[in-house]
Length: 159
Image 1: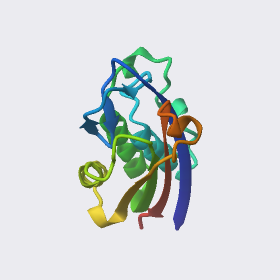
Image 2 (image 1 turned 90 degrees about the vertical axis):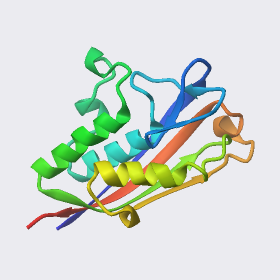
Image 3 (image 1 turned 60 degrees about the horizontal axis):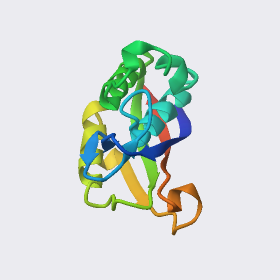
Image 4 (image 1 turned 30 degrees about the vertical axis):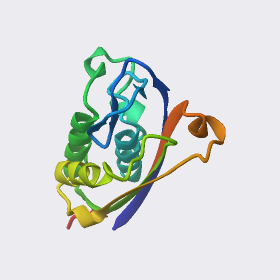
């Protein structure tokens, strides 16, 4: 049995925070605002996995009102999501994700993002696709006010 999940996440760019995407700290003058490290890419991937299992959303499992998640690395949240996947008998079929970001350029960082996701989810790097596009100076992405990430995942039921 296969199950599909999808998600979108949006975070505002602000000064005074590191920019972390896919578990990679990217040199930039702004970072993403959020309760955790605000890794918008991992949040979209996490929620797409949770959704594919029919277990609600990221806020149900990692609420931004819970102090234990304040400043937490989203790589740890991804690890917890992997543990949920295993407990429910699922493996990754594939992940296809998109980052919408005017700047900085994502291409140099995508290979490490893919490695990070594949390592934590115990899948082959060929099962993880991450791509990026710009806002072409339109909307809040184009004005460099925020970053959006989307993710679609296919899970396979073991056995």
